[in-house]
Length: 223
Image 1 (tube, rainbow, N blue to C red):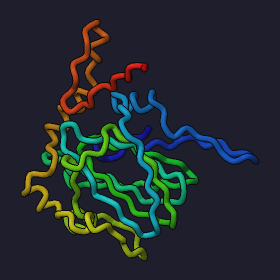
Image 2: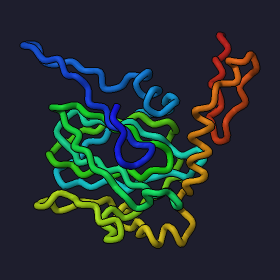
Image 3: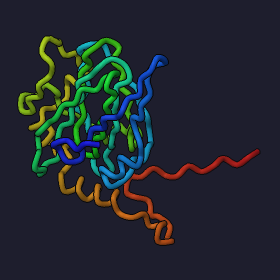
Image 4: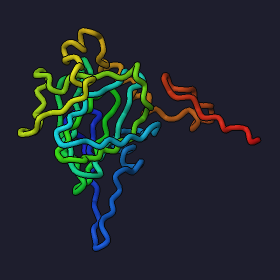
């Protein structure tokens, strides 16, 4: 996995094996992510979105802690995937980086907690699949307007952005900052350090639940 210019973001560029039957590639491997980030991805939810050409989704982020890390790929068509640093106090605050995700090169992007995420569909039926470290929690999730001039994201020319009513009504970056909605770089750094810490059970003690962690599932009693 190759690190992007924004701390906490990586792109995976897999080797794709093609023959007369089709193709095969590994779009996610836990050891590679662990080597890059220093920790794994606790999978809580997997999402799939299908978008018409020009659809613009984002910029979405969640409160930290616990935030929501994402691992994103495009399995049909193509999208321009954008990572935005929304962490106040970060050395790259307000910076963004774009990666084309498509069904040819099969790149994937890992986005750490606290970073903003958005994408624009470059084709019809652009199908994006993403793994999430946390489940959907509306009270903790927010957005920044993807066309905010302060971000100046270079969206593809020749496409008219199609936004949901929610994304179109999202605050600007300055408004979100004034409202105290943005995560701080310090809080995110502390969260990342906690993820990288050795698991307590490795030392023979039970693991305390991390703040905001989902409760373990209890098997149903057989009747």
